[in-house]
Length: 107
Image (cartoon, rainbow, N blue to C red; front, side):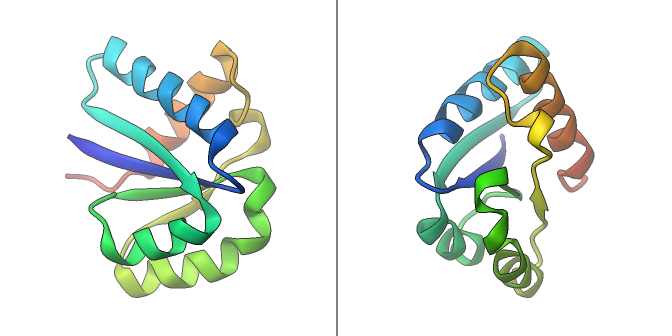
């Protein structure tokens, strides 16, 4: 199973998006699980977890540079989520799924 983490201010809105995006992938036959966490824990997880891709929510983009530097040191991609892909409706979930498929490293 491939794993993606959304890093958000508190992890609440992103938890809903993570759940819906995981369901989208399951329905499409993709073995990708999306999870969410807050910004403080997210920085630590970049260095020490088995997530393959880290997505930065629009409301935490001010931390992007620091998190990207951490990702670069750990050899893991860190990507900003476009605002139009951070909406918990089918169109937003589909866009977030496409961002993940484009950015997740090849196996």
